[in-house]
Length: 498
Image (cartoon, rainbow, N blue to C red):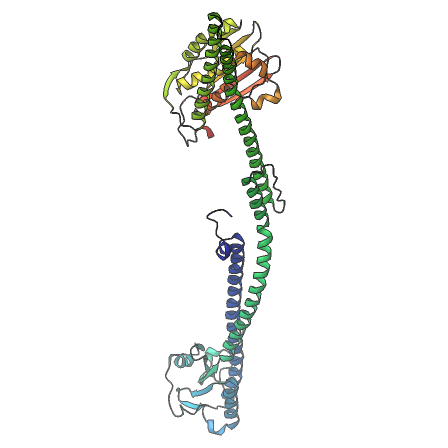
């Protein structure tokens, strides 16, 4: 395990597996709590509403008997109704009170308000024909205050409308809702028990599911550990979920690039070693030959020393190109941006390379469609184009030609360098910008160079936020196209994303 990675219990609490299980449990608990709480409220309200409606129906029947028997006028002469009121009070586990039309108490199941008047807003409203229901959650009691209308058999008005009937009194019923609340509490208790059971089951299922969910990630971690240990040729296959399939494809692509970079690095080290060793070997052979011939003529000494000097120059060129490439790739080299006339730059470059072209019997042709000015690093761009044109001359045919075309649009300038040379095989095109890569190694040794020219060219073009592409037909020639913005693009700009 790498440094900084939590271990043991702490590591478990920092793991994705724990977070997934915790998220599932929290979500499940919230859903259960919301469901049971809302259900308990509904059950309680439903039970209270049902009981209230039942009591209202009962009150209506009792009120009708009270009205028909004119109980409010002579309660003592109506023992049957009194017993019915007592039974109702006991059944409701509450209190029943009846008043006459003046709110004078004529019956009280608690025998507390006899011969008294009840003055309350609800009672006064009842005399106006308005029935009301109030609740006292603290005491777990509801109260219904209902008017007692004159019976149709005793009323002169037989319209049947309560608002046209005479109010003979008021009936007040206090009843307990404790059992309704207890029912809801029991429901909550059952819900808590079920929630705990569901929580345990959810933890088990969540842990199992999270384990299967993060298993591909563990596989990724193991494979990446293998990569860290140096086993790059590994393949990650995570075909469980589409997201993991995309991750595995991306990682396999990345591992492929890493493997290619590692191969390139090893090849680069091998090439560097070879390229640096070759001049030293030649120098060693020449110097040993001179040492072995103490009486060698001056002409031979001079010839050998010239060869030694050439090998030293070759070694120096390779080292300088390596240093230049290192600076370019690490972006440590400064960019000296200035407005440069690209037409003049190419004309001077071709004039400088003309002696090489004449010696190789190759014609240099320059064509420009318009005057082009751009913000570039003149020295670096000159070097990049020089490498391409010089290669086009070196690897050309006898009496061949190199054509340089310049054009531009509103955003970029384009330089196309085509030749009639030996061409590059299609299988080699993607490698020609690699360091020390040579298509024809034997001919490359003869023409000289460090094998770093095109790698340097690509780095310079990229530093200008441009692109370089190559097209070639083996035996017919090659064409390099360099495309660079007219205005230098600072780092982080989205200018090229149009």
